[in-house]
Image (cartoon, rainbow, N blue to C red; front, top):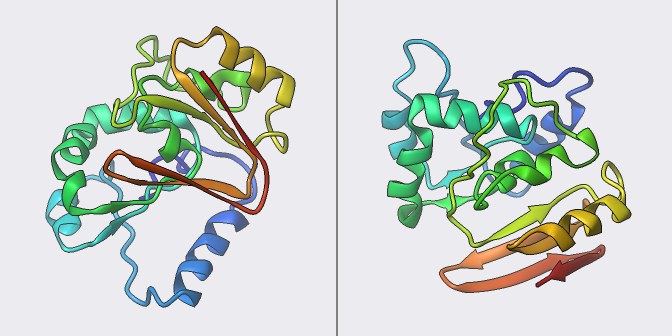
Length: 178
């Protein structure tokens, strides 16, 4: 689902690499569904998939479009029957709020959102791309001000969530606050 990357400028080789990685791991049927595209019955197409993998990109744009298209409500109603793989912006989307996207101005607020309430599908926030795009100092400063538990990840770390069970999967480094 390319919603968040549609507004990103610059090289998109990371997107191609994500698709190649999926293919190398045996995912040989991949559909690209964009709920923001006119005339696309995205809900019907998503009924057919087992895994939903919204791309990374601009978190503010992703939240704005998720609200406008109804993807936010659809995801809340259908997540129990699907595997959700978040990548950067689509990971942050699940949090109680997406304020972390503004750390070090990693994502410009292109949509002009003032309500940064995320989907609230998890009860914590995740700061991604530390230190490659966000400084450790800025991430920790944000974590100390937040009322939520915070996970701070590098680019080699992920969370595996199964119900209430949370497992950190990493070849890199991470921290948690609160």
